[in-house]
Image 1 (cartoon, rainbow, N blue to C red):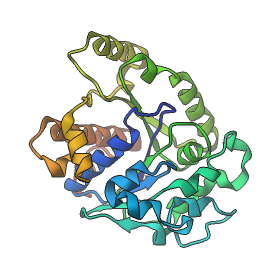
Image 2 (image 1 turned 60 degrees about the horizontal axis):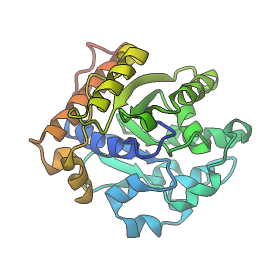
Image 3 (image 1 turned 30 degrees about the horizontal axis):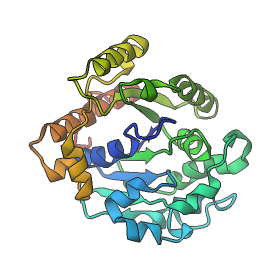
Amino acid sequence: MRTIAFLNQKGGCGKSSSCFHLSGAFAQNGWRVLLVDADPQGSLSQGFLGSELVENLPSTATVAAAFEGDELLVASESLVRPTSFSNISIIPANYTLAQFNQPSPERLGLQQFALSSLLDGIQGFDVVLVDCPPNLYLCSWAALLAAEFVVIPVPPEDFGTQGLRVVHEAIGHARLMNPSLNVLGHLVTRSDSRLLVHQVYEQTLRQLFGNTVFETVIPEAVAFKVALACRQPVGYYTTRSSAARLTLQLSREMQHRMDAFTGEAGRVTYGHRA
C-alpha cells in the first residue's frame, strides 16, 4: 500500500482537487483507493459525501478519532466509508479535527503518529491519498510521518510559490523520523498557458527543482469544477475531456515514479497487480 501526502502550506493550490480527481483515475485503472481527509475544512469529504452528511458526523466517525487519545480509540477500518464509486473509499474529516491541529507538532507526543497508527490497521488498498490542510501543523506533520511519498501542488504564480522552502524544511525534518519519505514531485496546478506570468513561473519551478517537477501540468479547466459540483471525479464525469486525459496521464506518471523509488518497475503494470 503506497501512501501519498499532498502538502503545501498555501491554500487554494489544488491539494483537495488533486486528491479528488486522481482517486478516480487510479480507480478506473483497477487500483483500490483510500482517501484520508486530514484537513479540518473537510472539503474532500464533502466532495464525495455531501456537506450535510459530513458536517453532522461525530468525531468518532471521522479521522479525528485517531487523535483523540494516545491510542486509536476505535478500529481503524470502522472509519473507512465507501463512496458511490467502485474502488474509492474515504476516511472523512470535519470541524471536529480542528482542535487537534496544533502548531509545534514535534512536541505533541504520540499524536504525531496518529495517522501512522490509523493506516497500520487498514488493509486492502493499493494507494492512499492524504489531503493535508494549508499549514504545517499537526495534521500535516502526522501525514508526513505516515506517508511514503509527498506531492507538492504549486500554482505557477507568486503566491503559490511562496513558502516552498519551509515546506521542504518540514519534509526534511519528517525524514529524521520517517526515513522512507520521498518527494514524489512538484505538481504545477491551476495553470493557464495563455498567461506569460504562468509560463515564466513554470519555467522557474523547473529550473529550481529540475526533474522533480511533474511533466504533466494541470490546467485551470472548467471541467474540473463542474465535475466536482456534480460530485464526480473528472474521469467519471467527462471521460473524453482534456482534463480527464491529463489526470489519467498524471496518475500514470506518479505510478512510474513510485515504481522507480520502490524498485518495482517492470514488475507491476498499471492497473494490474503482479
